[in-house]
Image 1 (cartoon, rainbow over the protein chains, first blue to last red):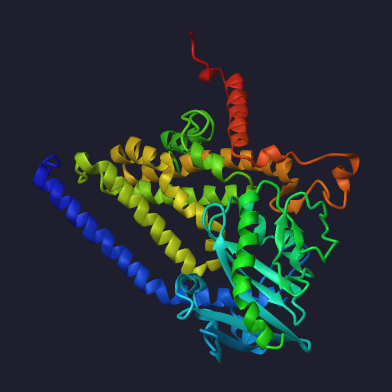
Image 2 (image 1 turned 60 degrees about the horizontal axis):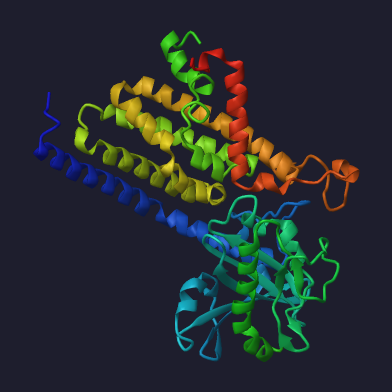
Length: 244
Length: 215
């Protein structure tokens, strides 16, 4: 029987343990990486398509295009992917892979802003990615506008909002409310406010730029407001150029 | 149950009631409080903990004779953390949607005191098979309470179960809501989980005489 109380044994055990666990984890991570990257790519495509209303929603629940067919459908509906950098707009077929979180940290000159132009049933959709802060962690999403700056659909997601409260921003009853709202009031950018006391649960007033807040999720709601206002605003000068 | 001896059966069934990790040992309260606002989250968390606890117990039990006692807590922590990371990566690669739904809970598993508690109290002194049973049993006992709490919090707080509106539509005022019933938003807040757990402990203690301490 080994004396497990000796200092030298303890030390050797610790080193071996760290090496073994470290290599097992490194091996797992590197062998699964291609599959994970693929999944993340598909997820982004699903989210962009969801915002422009290409999804398989049933009644109250939000359902994406299945990931095994999303690539083809993405190519079909998204007719242009643009990158806005330093005032210039260029085409880039992998613009959807740009990480908005990283780009927002860059200076204005080096910042690449992706923008997607989709077409469904003869109608154009301009889809803008968004990124912001919720209560606990990051929130992000996509917002689809038509040429009159009217919201055609949104998609929100979050890294770690409270289940049952803030996490409900990705539920349909919250996301659907944004459809029909305008982000411009009298040619000036006004964004959309997630408002408490809006007292309009079915969102019948579309012209007020307000949607009903989620009960118990004040800070996540404010985060959504701030996210829409700060990220969409960056695109407004260019949307005019695109003759939106 | 001819497969298992009486003692092994006890390992599996005791934690469900008489030695429940939440209501009797009062462990794992933190996650019971954090994630029980919805029934689905409770079920998912219970299953994840079961997987990690059973597997971790087996690993620790296999290593029990070579772990230096001075650093055993760190070793246990590494085993849990490694298992959780592997589970997380595998889910991300092969069940991406499920891993999205689990995102918060995966991290929470590491902090669950039941896991460290069982490693320390059981797996370090028992063989792999019995440690496995102990892991399954304790995770089931933990999961049972989570599901009960999740059931009441989602039903009374949101009027839904697993996302389905079982009490009618609160906006269109159908079902119970038509008769003036309102959801109790309090139930969605974490402290209500403690009150529900408290009520469960109360009921359990008042019905089970074995648990009542003599003064």
